[in-house]
Image (spheres, rainbow, N blue to C red):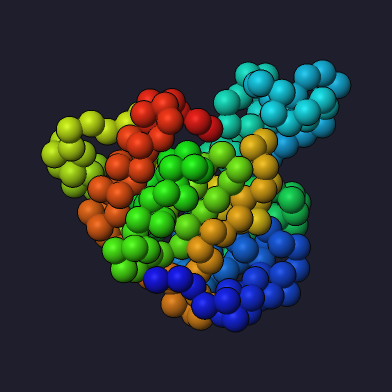
Length: 234
């Protein structure tokens, strides 16, 4: 089910009206939806080459100490993932000091989980799910990967679902308990994070599908990718 454009625009206006874009997004997630968040490491200017593969161009790189970071700007560092919170005062303090820091969601527990896959396969999967009349929750997109937010799942439940498959492509990633996901409107080494399917506005947390409802389409779309879904594209 596609999101309603007018509601999407109202949500985006709400995020912008709360101050800097990242602060508004973090406050919405934490206080309205009760999703624990924390600031990501972000990007920094450097005098040498960019991150791995030169994706960020000259003078760009991850702000963490690893010069070969494979997810530049798109991960927690200081504070670590266990610091994620819904406390408004802490969130305001973090983003007052680092207003452009990426917004990182700590997945699992009472918060959403997610499945991510390469962008081309993600587009195919959404088309297939729409064709089945499947109701979807929010979908994140970067230039390289798309992520479908789903209801919290346990590792045991996920294992049961994947064990029943003939083949699970390694390009799929599962963001569950102890994991994280970068939320819009963050910018990372792979580019801008945006909503492909934006959450509807309102005080309640966005509706999320069960992982079992979408995993078949995501596995099939990844297996049908040109490389057979065997390449883990960051």
